[in-house]
Amino acid sequence: MIVAAFEGWNDAGEAASSAIDFLADAWDAEPFASIDPEEFYDFTVTRPHAVVGEDGERRVEWPANEFAVVRPPGAPDIVLLRGVEPQMRWRTFCDQVTGTAEQIGARLVLTLGSLLAEVPHTRPTSVFGTAYDPVVIEALHLEPSRYEGPTGIVGVLHHECRARHLNSASLWAAVPSYVGSAPSPKASLALVRRLCDMLHTTVDAQDLETASIVYERQISDLVAEDDQTVGYVEHLEEQHDAERAADGSVDLVAEVERFLREQ
Image (cartoon, rainbow, N blue to C red; front, top):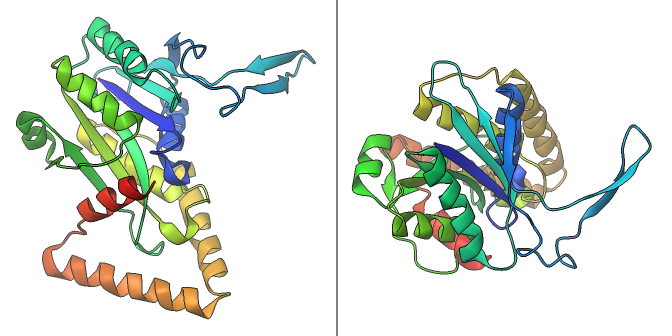
């Protein structure tokens, strides 16, 4: 199984990429391969960074797409792909990802994403899962993907997976639209928990849980400074609670489609 997340279009609040980073640290990831960035990025848009290491040596860090293996307790080995959405040659880029999936015999390619949605920060973060194949949908309790419109590297990757007859699915976490620029550990935590449930495994998420509590308190303090925003959040809370009371869930399908079309 490959679990992938990419910085950029599909990573509101840095929730998806941060979830991969957290799992890599928690499960002692062992990198084993990377994708050469040379032909996939416009370096005037996604610029490399010059850094000085602890040894005093200066080096250049390029946009990285790295594969690493992790061994969750009680679950099969997983390959994590932590990357950056490229600007060029998306089909060639996805060929490298799907080619790696075939080489390691991955039974599923699962992408993590996060989107801006009309949801309150004071309620549990909703996670919405989609897939194309009916067997995958039934096995993982997901929803069929019927989205039409602009797409990112995640959408193209799933298309290429279908072309190669690779099972694939996607998990999306909802980030409040009124604080979309702030990193959201709460959304990252929701993705981590949903993934662990799917894998029937566990991870010590105490650090993410603490960061989520701090995040919610900080956003509440900011919201309290503006009466109009207070009213807006209260409206979102009422809407969320009404949906929960009606059928026990919050429908994010429309939010996913709106987010993708507006980006």
